[in-house]
Image 1 (spheres, rainbow, N blue to C red):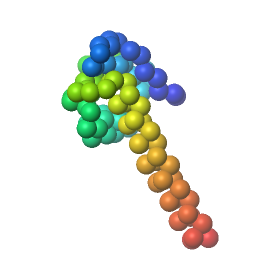
Image 2 (cartoon, one colour):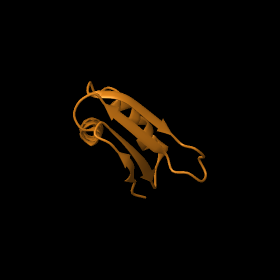
Image 3 (cartoon, one colour):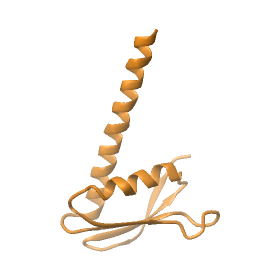
Image 4 (cartoon, helix red, strand yellow):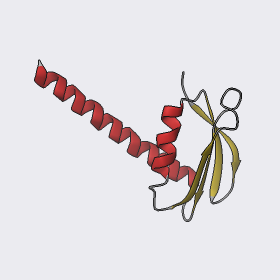
Length: 96
């Protein structure tokens, strides 16, 4: 299943997204990593009801655009996961 975002609301310094076809293992690290961005003021991640509602994430920035903060975070996570994958592949080759 591919996860997709739907914009619920957008202001100059904030954005609220709903994640469709979500997997909690994707959204929790995203929310935690967004908080590490020095341009981000606050992040809220919540699910009203786990069986019937999609999770929502709210991002407010103190400078720049909130969607840019999300994109930067996704790029950082992507790089991290690619590095982890590469390290595992190298380890696998070294054991063979």
